[in-house]
Amino acid sequence: MIKKDKLGFLNINTTLYHTRISCKFENRKPYQPADPRIILSFIPGTVLDILVKAGQDVNKDEELMILDAMKMQNKLRCSMDGRVKSIAVKKGDKVSKGTVLLELE
Amino acid sequence: MPLNKKIRELQEKREKVLLGGGEQAIEKQKAMGKRTARERIMALLDANSFNEYDLFVEHDARDFDMDKKSLPSDGVIIGSGTIYGAPVAIFAQDFTVAGGSLGLMHSRKITKIMDHALKMRMPLIGINDSGGARIQEGVNSLAGYGEIFFRNTISSGVIPQLSVILGPCAGGAVYSPALTDFVFVVDNISKMFITGPEVIKTVLGEEISMEDLGGARVHSEVTGNAHFFALSEEECFDQIKKLITFIPWNNGQKAKMLEPGEPRPEYNINKIVPEDPTLPYDVKDVIRAIVDNSDFFEIMELYAKNIVIGFGRMGGRTTGFVANQPLEMAGVLDVDSSDKAARFIRYCDAFNIPIITLVDLPGYLPGVDQEHAGVIRHGAKVLYAYSEATVPKLTVILRKAYGGGYIAMSSRHLRADFVFAWPSAEIAVMGPEGAANIIFRKEIMSSDDPEGMRKQKVEEYKTKFANPYVAASRGYVDAVIEPSETRKFLMHSIEVSQNKDVTMPQKKHGLPPF
Image (cartoon, rainbow over all chains, first blue to last red; front, side, top):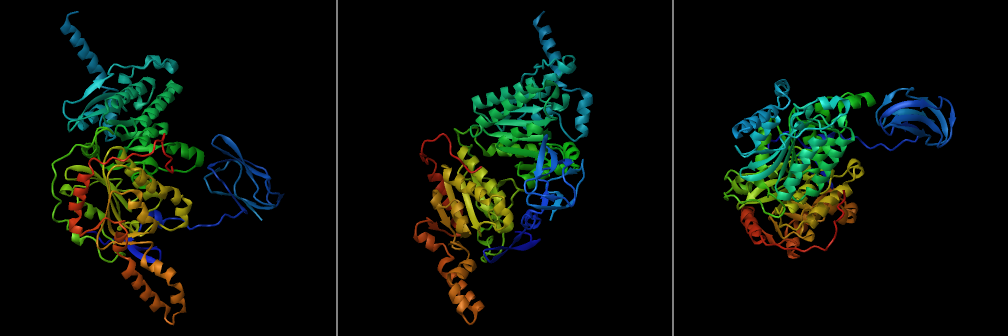
């Protein structure tokens, strides 16, 4: 009594099952390992201050930026020793979670 | 003053208050496609059964010119009545009065009827239609919410609590429905969120409509916050009434029995499940082939469709059904379906409703997203809920029962009272392909024709293990039955389980993985 509409295949333990595939499963994002060279906003907020310039040498744990979020001034620290390659935002920008803020090299 | 004059005075006072926020506000409410709070109560309860309390309650706020404002009944209607004769306590927020905003007296009215419902051990229905906290009343309105949440929590598992979202329900207010057993929403009318679209826009610059952020569909399909979705208030009230017929009035009782009836003949149980375990079918048809009058009342129909939950009757007795749905995502257990099933199992256990579990699943959904979303913790909820439940637990293995999925789905090992399996059942540690690849890896790899050898070994494994008889030989399955015998076996099992008595070790409470 089922309509044979939009059936796909799902692989569970090397067996292919004929079944409907949910939107959530189809739209899932492929996994990508975290890259320490890319500083992302961990929370939505507003860029309050940028403490470094492009081309500047930076050390691990050095403060890079202040992100105002949830009524708190959050300090974003450097993930590694290196140099600031580029800054993708400017003071006052509103950013959502996961936005690229700064790239290191 | 003579008595009849006093009576007239009462009538006049009533009439004034009964109009709520006045005709203009009522017109506005209607323009939004909404009924007034009082109309809603009348539509839901049996005719002439509503007794209203606290009609003349008023706020006594002074700040911000509130002392000059009169808010009839303080924006909420409370009382009790009946639904098909079952007693219910009810409150309905009146959006026409100050946007249904919650002040101290408004909240005191709600907590009064909540206390009443708990004391009298009767179901509580809350109709939410409110702009949120009454800002002018400051921390008093926060206190009001807190008092409501506390009562929701202590009443949980004692009396059924139903929340009906018929308008906005935003900010802290959403936590009362979230703490209750069942949440009803109506398309284009219900709106639930912690922070609204305006805040999200100011803080993040993200634009989203109210409907896309927290509309009825979103909560029914995506978040899982709502249990029943309706296209109109009328349909929503029908759902509530139907639910009330299935559940007991409190945790000390069983649901009322109805006249039993046979399933409809068009649901031919022998012809629903395909033999090939990789082919789908609609497991709801199996349920309909088993329950009285083929009447299955599904809960959370649109969320995590790979598991089906809901109520039906067996020989007139309310029974909860949990069934893997091979039609959707092959019926796998994943984060969402585990959460959905576990909560329902605990509901049935709290309210003395036997559980029938229909098993046909290939296992847990593989994937980085699932693992990182905590499928271990969420999947464990199913094990916990089944193990902890002391109501009669009946299991029918229709087809696949592989690996962890077999254990989780109300297996003998989690103390199912009766486990039945159809001849088509495949109870094994994993599917034949996967198992053969592991067990016979050497033979397959060293063969001149690996693919041929693999196929041969898969067949070998299938014949030997892809059946119910290995489990039956250990007593893990109580009986291998023909599909057409299913209803008979289940009815009998429920009948003989009526006086089931299990004592669990004394504890304050367990620690389910949530």
